[in-house]
Length: 80
Length: 148
Image 1 (cartoon, each protein chain N blue to C red):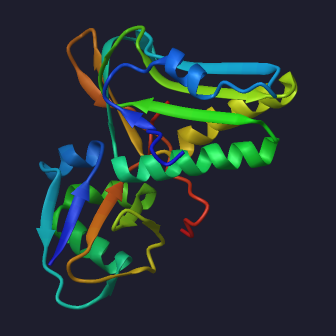
Image 2 (tube, rainbow over the protein chains, first blue to last red; image 1 turned 120 degrees about the vertical axis):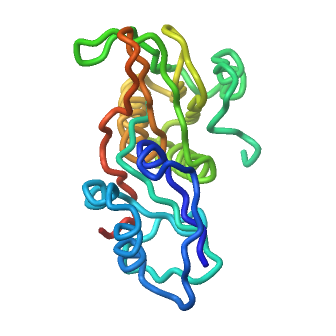
């Protein structure tokens, strides 16, 4: 299992700030994103512009996420 | 250094930042304030909500302060962003730069706010005067170690 956190507009799409996603073995972030897209089709149009963080560190999509980790999905930012 | 906060839910305190950065070797002080305005893209705005990935914002802005100091050779750089609900006229972000001379201070402050806008995981949700609410489109997060 991993903990998935949604930020910004993604919270509205997901209807939640977090969800648990089944993960039994380490897997690249890109593959987890594909699984999440199947679960939440509304994510699809946002995926190309998302950044990802695992356990509070920005990671490339090739990064391997392990069971127990927290994966944060970070849409385009608008601070300032 | 490490106990300096970069994200806060209470109103930003410019005087506190000026006091924190007081520096006898600096002859120039530049302050940038991002202030909530009452319009966006032709629509009336009545308030904003800022949300953030707190741990990452703390890390990103602490690193940005250090980068600004090294890159521009300025004495001091402090950046603090607000989260929560803000009214028109409230400060959403403050950048304070002190340096020996003014050119570096202006350049450094400009770089700090421009870079914050593409690196800080902060999201702005606008409440419009017609009652609608929307997230700003934003820019994809850029990060030194972001490979794709």
